[in-house]
Length: 113
Image (cartoon, rainbow, N blue to C red; front, top):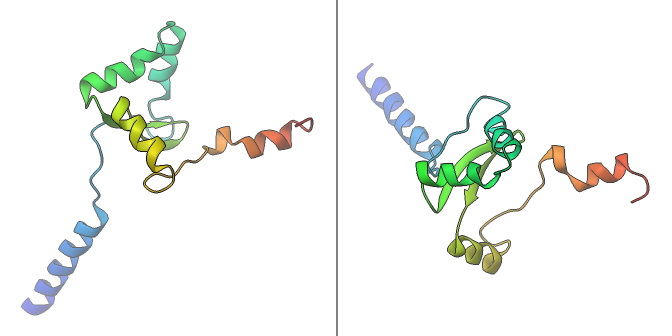
């Protein structure tokens, strides 16, 4: 019985280490809508940059995580982040369009394109 418990506990610890990834600091906000309402608030006030600035001050000035448009994302800020993205292109990061903003979906809705 003790061997079974030890084996189960060891398996649990190994699986826990594999499934936990190191994510940047930040908040995903509410389920489904994420931090979209905060983004809308800053956009309506005429200062859309405040959304990013607030999170850079609160979490990290170089990188933070958030959830926008139904997708969990990492936001990279500053010249070092731009250099990383534009010099590595597809080697380190993967670009994608959220389903709500996919240009392929827009072509289907607008036949003139």
